[in-house]
Length: 165
Image (tube, rainbow, N blue to C red):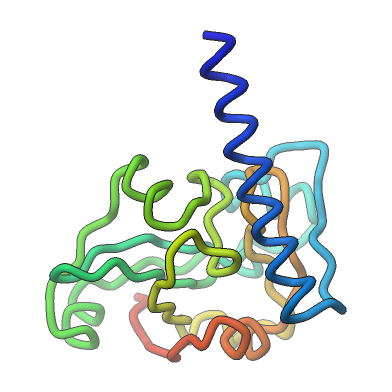
């Protein structure tokens, strides 16, 4: 069991480092914030960072046909499967925990569109545009960044979509 915990710690640490490296290269003015408490869920992150849950930018890892994609949306928004299918031209399914880690390099609860293990197509849902600042995770269950939705979309080359209820 101790080996498993140390492997998880190492995975989280490397994932966080990949995000820190991403920002060092692409947006050195943005600081990765590390919290003492877990921010692995929308409610936990909102409480720790003292923002409303909608400001937490959750990243969903999905498979559409044979492509793995990321959809970043407001923490209180729900995915509308019909809109998603219409927008992407096919039905999507959520990835398993192992698939998420393998595709993104980030642990569940720390998944974000930055510092990815593999290049993935990123979509930002219009629900994020209700906020001047959002807080997506930053590669670990204890980290995030504060960023405008527009800047996040620019840095990740995301396409804006309307796939929330």
